[in-house]
Image (cartoon, rainbow, N blue to C red; front, side, top):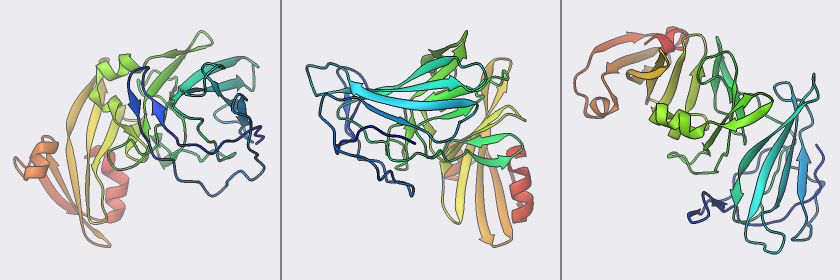
Length: 269
C-alpha cells in the first residue's frame, strides 16, 4: 500500500451538517503503516490496498470539504474493476477531523462456510443482502458506535449501471436490522437467504435474531439463545422474540446438542 499523508487527529465523524457524533479513535491493527509523514492541513490524503479486493483495485482519498476551512473532511473510496478497468466511487462519510488510515491489508470476511459472511473489522465489506445474486457494498463504518463498542456500518450501496447508488434508506425501510450492521455481530447467509444479528454475546451464554428473506420482505423468524454447559454440551432455547428470551417466557423449543452439531446446524434453528 502507498500512502501520501497522515495527520494525528481525533476521529470525530459528522452524520449530517447539523448532527455531530463524537467517536473515539479505532484500535490500531497489527499491520500499521510506518512509512507516513505529517502533511499540511490543506493536503489530500490518499492510500491504496496492496491486493485487489473482490475483483477491484481500491484506493481511498481523504480531503477537506472546503479548502478554506479545516473543520471537516470527506472520505471516498475509488474501486477499479480489474477486468474492465471501469471505476466507481463510494462515499465513506463526512468527518470532523481528518481520519487516519492504518492498514494496507484487508482482512477477509469472517466466513463460517456455506456462503455465510460476517461483517469484518474493516471500513467496508461486500455482501448480497437482498439475495439477487449481486453483492452490495456496505461502508461508512463509524468506530465504537455499535452497542458493544464495535464499529457500525451506516451506508449501503448497490452497483447499478457502473455506478454506486446509495440504497441505505431503502434497506433500512425494509427492516430495522439494517440499522444495526455491527462488526462481528451481523451475518448474511446466501444459501438460506437469511440474516442473523447477534443480540447478546458471551462465553457461556449468547443469542441472535434471525430474519428470513421472503417475497421481497425480511420476515422475523425467532430468537435463539445458547447456553454452554461444558466443552461439548450446548443447550439451545427458541423464543418468539428477544424480549421473551430475556424474560425466559413463552419458550417454544429447548434441546441439548454437541458443539459440533451446533456449529453445523445453527442457521437451521
